[in-house]
Image (tube, rainbow over all chains, first blue to last red; front, side, top):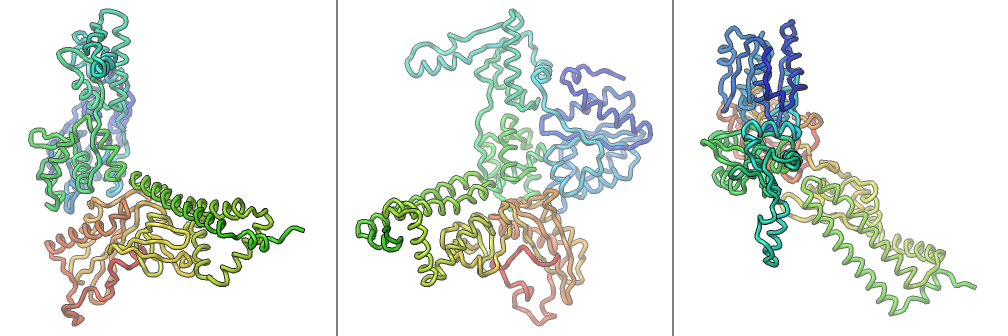
Length: 326
Length: 289
């Protein structure tokens, strides 16, 4: 089997092992479909890639990127591959009358097919469908994406940003100086900053650890959110501790705003037309989307609305509190 | 010889003491209002956890008035505990004979506080009035009806009448939604559409303990498709009904599912169905499935 170095770094061994057992069981004649369930940006696709890389035989992988009206082509395209991996299965339904037809056909296929299905689901779509469609019956093996620790977060960020060329700056004190500057004009901000070049002395590793611990804590161990926190604090090759934070978000919402936001959260991304179909044109969609963007809760990316990573947990907290997601 | 409780009570009743007692009662009244307001204010900021917070209001009000009365009798009139009991008994008997209904309401207030047949924030039907309990006072309960009227029902009603609570202290509430269709319509499709209208509503709350059910009942000239589901916050009960009904009917008509033919019953122009004229005041939680 092939080794995948990155997944070893992010320590998904337990989850990979669980899926590998299902694959081995399938080779031995027991078909137990797998559902990988996780929050947005939690690394579900990475996990599936790692499993595919390690598995010696061919797996047909399909990544869904928008709402699907048909599923028959997915199994048809599998050809001779006995295992089908489908990423982002929440695109198989929309929360509207008549929006479950594709999912129902898919579940019929899952129940009757000879293929093994390795699927990923957004947690909130999964929880919703579990209550209204008994989804768990079709996927006996369920793997929850774990919260990642500081080491895994550091490895993921390090894969994109070279740690050797990053300067770690502990400017937590300089924030205090900024306050003093405002109050009494004592010193300029940044003069007291302790600048430590990466890899040069022993203090650096301590500072790096502290930084990644803070990022892991602020991101709730979510690699996508952690990356967003890092990018926010990364300026010209420097990471400043004073900039590692998650801003506050205004999350008091009307039921209409919460409903639209919950659908974006559940689907990972949605177009305006998707949302119009869900709400049957009853809502003032443009105004709602404008408000959500204005509050920094969502962003528009290539015509699709997605949750702002830094706001992810504020949104989840708010929508759970108002019972818009479970 | 020590004067009896009643003699001492009468001898101690002076203009000064009466004014003193009225001032204490006034302070207690203001304190009860302020504390109730603060609990209510805090509860509203707790969102879906508001009902447990508001549950303590009746206890606090009773405690404040109890302390005030105790203070008047013990401190202002300087009664010993024996005299206090004697006077309290006589006052109680006098109130019992002269103001039975008022006294029953006060007793009802205590029963509501301790037995909790309903709490502030619940949706209840009391004396044929349906609405959200806004305040449980010492003497009366105030209900806000869906039409926006505040109904004040004496607490004695809880002793004498049937009281039904739609949510029993929970924030979510079971809602029954009935749609009536022509017997020749595709009822399988009608049930599926209604179920999807419910589970896709922005007001629905579905868990293993709070499932969604859809039933079909056959009647001589129509069929009734009934959904039972929970609204996530009882304050959205009518929004939930309206949302589900509007979307379901839109799809019914698109799918060729029609309302019953009123002309068969010679009912053209009359409200349909004939037995569903209860509107917002009806008890919406029961009924057969």
